[in-house]
Length: 152
Image (cartoon, rainbow, N blue to C red; front, side):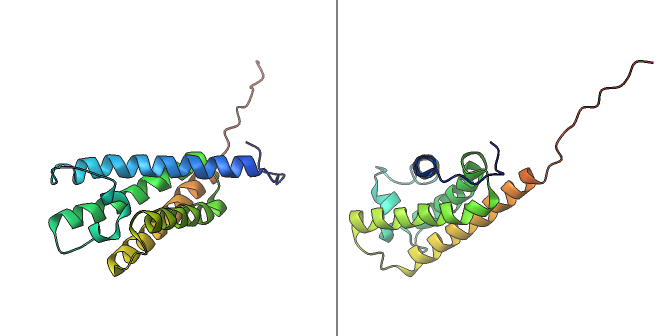
């Protein structure tokens, strides 16, 4: 995609937000199944959207915390392919976590746990900074130019 001319395309932005949100929850669900699913008898949406499950007091709580932080790292990798621009990573990561906050409020009420806030702010930082780093590395790659050699 050519980025020289900035074009305002709200449908592209909305589709990128929806795609990134879906990929984030897919990664979070898979990580929850791997890390938490083996420790609990029944894995429910409670572990994704209820602030009470993010607790450092239990081993399961630490597994939930690890799943959230690893999902943030996976979200950074998704931003490399979905967003493709380093300067947009913070905006999309913040949008993802604001939408997650609203879903958590609807599901289980206002997050009253300090641990929930720390984990989600750390996840936002991981996703935005790692996403920017990955996108900058891609943007700074040399453009390969093949040279035609004259036959002598």
